Image (cartoon, rainbow, N blue to C red; front, side):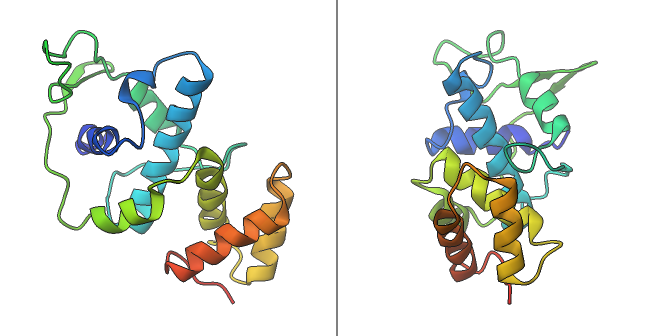
Length: 177
């Protein structure tokens, strides 16, 4: 596990991108927070120079890291919060307890650029955007990429996928021909 995960999760919570307390909830809100956490880590790691070291594979809802799920499900926030519900003392429960500490996020991480891209985006946008970015490794032609994402995401119409693709291209998160 990367020692910056706790810092990044706190960054997401502080910026109201996820609700940390919902990660372990067995509800739709809990699922959506876990899904968003996966997508934010993918974006930060692959497009905003935050090296968290997670590997992602293809999954129903876009790129997915089983190790990331294991790491944030191991976050034991019940036993290690102070009376102010402080997230600074997170402990991850795995085979042994790792104390995150809260390290400042590396200066290489483009926080402002990241927030500019993801602020106000919903789960659908994150799913489509990360799927596009993940598949862009194999398809450099915009038309082919659009076709492949449309096939893998039939619940989203082609126009919406094209809109997200255009936004990612405009924001220079990817380039296709």
